[in-house]
Image 1 (spheres, rainbow, N blue to C red):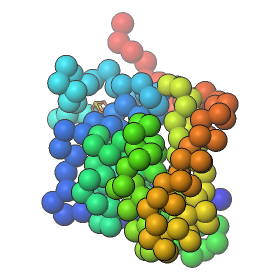
Image 2: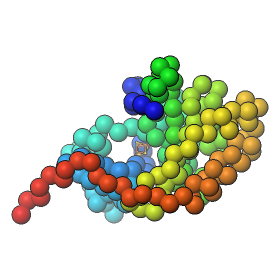
Image 3: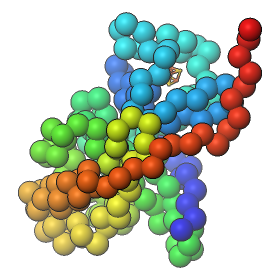
Image 4: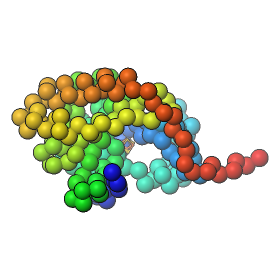
Length: 194
Ligand code: SF4
Ligand code: SF4
């Protein structure tokens, strides 16, 4: 299914604050910088902040997670606090309806009990956004991505947070058992100075 990153404005007044979850969890794959998922960026300093913030890479400047882009996500969903990183929303092209998709990447086991996660999924369903669950594997491997839209539809319409979290937990446990292929960079690394 073809997907493109949705062109959404930033939520006013919402900032990254002390969060650096994307600097650990995600892949960066451009000639100037390659980083595997689950591996902290080498530029994170002792205070866990970006040590090259003013000159950070193009990919870093362009990146905003769902917390920064989706106004219906509650304030409690900042990734470092929630243990959940909502990946940048995409639109699905295959059916031509341009429907928005949001993938919830689970960063910590504690997130599986997070009422804010349930609240967010309910809000997504009610906003007619397709819901996916992403579960990272060992560092350097691909995360899984499972379509939860149908499974959470009824619990979300009934506003049952416990039933939504039950679907998430079951999917998470199943995904954890899946063998993951390694991430292979697509860009050619820039030559390093001698
Ligand atoms: S994960 Fe989101 S909130 Fe956290 S630093 Fe990255 S863009 Fe900012
Ligand atoms: S260069 Fe800075 S902003 Fe980019 S991933 Fe590394 S720590 Fe994060």
